[in-house]
Length: 371
Image 1: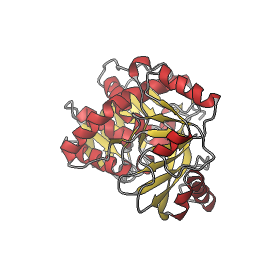
Image 2 (image 1 turned 90 degrees about the vertical axis):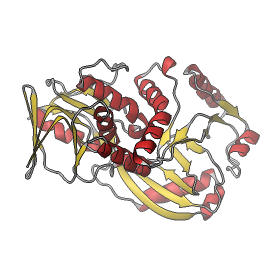
Image 3 (image 1 turned 90 degrees about the horizontal axis):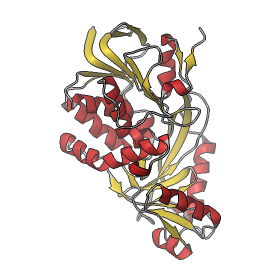
């Protein structure tokens, strides 16, 4: 069976679906192809944290994507709710950063304020107001009132439904793809199906590098496993996100708390381990001791698409005029998806993106594959 469209997107995670959503809303014919069910890999597995940003003062590639995406999330969530009837759980909950003492607090506050963010220094009494029962080891911290969150599974469901409502064709469970890009057309074949399009966009997360090898391009995107535990308490002891370095506690409005996450370079091995989950549970109790009595509801793992500098590769694939890539977001795929999709949609429609691609282009690290 053969399928045809203006644009073919391989990878039905949050980046691919959001890009399809934006393009379809502009009247473009889009097909999304995924190796399994869409929205069931890293996009689904994350905690949905949306740190704030201020686009006018964003000075780094990370800050530009984060800030521009943050500015879009509230309206984007409302739009998805209207189109799909599904609430993705978007809300501003604030975040407390703990584990900062003395000069570290002041340095972090200075950095955030230089970016134009609202933030407050917290002493022990202020910490306890935000997080009653916080372990006594924490005496100082910082608070970001604009920090927000969404619930990943709900967001992916709303996004998928909205895409289908706009006419996006979603083809699932298609593996063993081969890609040919010649001249002005792209052809993608599987054992049972053929897809043709004017332009191709590769947004397959940790699997993107594998897809690009037949094109003669090596993209250094590798899987990084992250494990998460989900707890349930009778009454939430805190309402804000709590962060300690790269680990976190994310409270949901229905009494669930996500505890994450590990960061493991184990290849494409997506499973929970005793060591990983026990470490997360110990971390939760070390932050708020009463969580030692919480119910463990479930655990899961996801494979983040890591890159050497932890920044995504966005733009045309080197050597091709009609093949584009959006991958390597590491821990920030969902968070940065609105701005990333805007960049990819603009590029594929021959428009200049509103966000600079400095520090994000695939050419910054990619090299020809050794065949």
